[in-house]
Image (cartoon, rainbow, N blue to C red; front, top):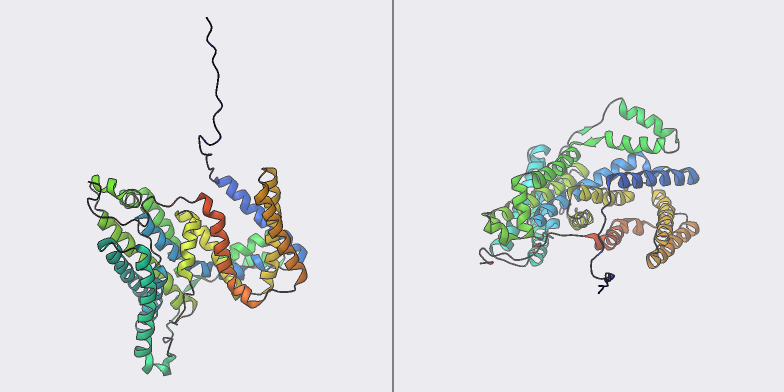
Length: 422
């Protein structure tokens, strides 16, 4: 008697396909490819503005407040608290930073900006962690409350400081914080950039923007991002904090004081957002003004989501959004050249999607590439309102493209009560 064995094929839906992460070599290869593309477009069009040291320096400056707001969101959401009140906390940082910067000095202004943002974070923690109010409702309330308070105090407090440069919606200017330039290296890179050599001058322009007229606050922000990674992923404190965002009931069963870690994380979140606000009022403009943040708190949240709740991805997202934000401060021709650059990139993406037999995304990419190419060919420049709207459009596009690979903390946004799992 024989026994026949048969192997049943696995059903296509039995196991989800594993999502592959982009490795470091692949990421470096993509960056190199992007540089080659930008260099080729610059050589053809004669416009080298996208990689000019001035453009990179402006992009780096624009990325700092976005990165600090995103870092604040990272700390809060890793503990399980959604913080869309970052915009309001940034406003507190702009006001307190400019106020202390004018009365004392800009260094004290930075600390005051962080303290103002931390107070906003404390308010958010009290409302959400202690009283269990919905996180979104609390964040919206903070975004309405803090800017109103700051605008009201500004009109009352600075009405006698008109002779010192203040106004109804503006504080007196504070002193400038120092900026650093590496002597010798900066001049050498500037000379290489001026030759417009293919790829070499573009790399020199990028490096020149990183070592020329660099604000100390930019360095501080970069240090905070690196330190945050080591604190959250390489220490016991960070492990406990992240466990509160993944499974607070399990963390409580292991003796973790969930309330304490949520409070610390949200207060730190506000402090980072406050630093981003202080950068706007002490470095970018040297004074507080109503509406100064211009939605950067929300763009910072988008950068955090783009980075998948990781410091490295957050930094990349802040750099992307900072670059698009800085375009409105530079030559408008740069935006026009960017159209054909993105069009070629979308065409290459469409060909790759065809190779992988992803026909629907490929068709969409082809359509976008063709539309951008037609736009570039039929116009000589991009209208100013469209340039101003670029950061917000890029934010929506990037979030839509990245939505399929996101993995937020499991308990993010959930209302926690001590002993709820017992």
